[in-house]
Length: 88
Image (cartoon, rainbow, N blue to C red; front, side, top):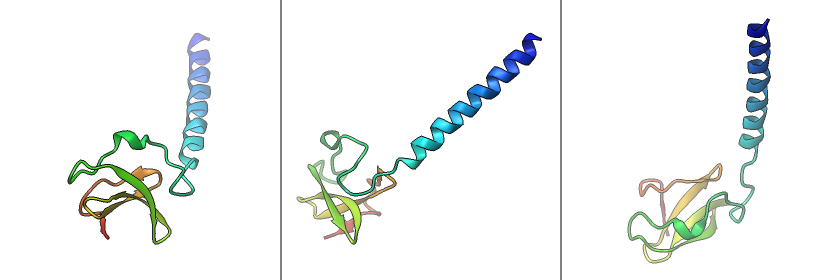
């Protein structure tokens, strides 16, 4: 009887965790000013300069003014690769 109760509890827990995961995944930023990471700790990987939020071609980017590189933000995650950056 206990094994059945544990299996049911385990199933209920899995179901709840999956539901919470789906809610989390649906919460994506809607614009450049709705980001889910602190900007004060993110720096340019090339020059370690300060980054500012900017919209480039209707997509949010992090702009490094000293390097003139804009790093895209996709699904709330900044892609801090120089290969992905847009040169301005």
